[in-house]
Image 1: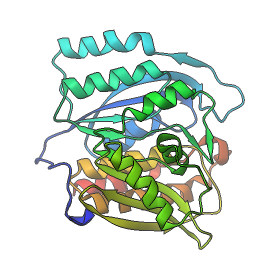
Image 2: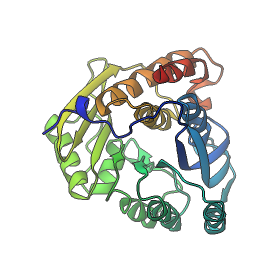
Image 3: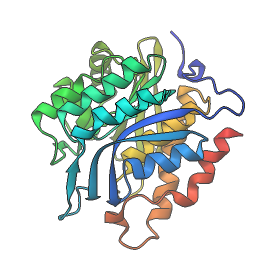
Length: 290
């Protein structure tokens, strides 16, 4: 059994720019998804290649938004990549607009078998599914658990994926192990379970794998919630991995980076709806290359 300090998923070669297929939606307003993944991973010296799963005027927390489903374009979009011999080092998936879009991710897996499979199963929070997520889409998302090199669910998403009832954010370590064991049994190689809160001023994230020791990592819990922090956490975690950091150090970095961004965000107008403001902290990501 290895510790997470000893596990490195990516060996960064000097001056090489890794290429990442980022399978997410794009929002015109409200910072989340590709609006977070592209700058964060670019700051880590990665070439981010978007595969847009939907186009939104704003994120779905706004009472008025327009969504354009991109499902029909994904097949010819990826056909063009094949024609141009595009190669990627990682496939990073997040919010999906339709169950059929899972096939596009699985196609990327087949065409790039050596690529890291990083799955952020964006489906809900606070015990509730997001408005656009149907039962069919949730079931399709579960197919991405099998073979995921890194899976990053929150407690709501872990409940949806495993069928284990959601019991809130204050759950025991034993409950966390139940979720993690179920996700590993479904085929995930590494699980980072996010957002456990026990009322002591800390937010806890748990890291485990089939041959990796169970680890708890903590960061400061701020007294407000923000849209897009899950996307920022996952993007920062992958950024650190692609910079050659260990799983443990990458997970610790992601928690600290989100906290730092949230501190800055509170000083911005309309911060609770606008989303997490990370831009002035991107130097922390760039420093990973050092």
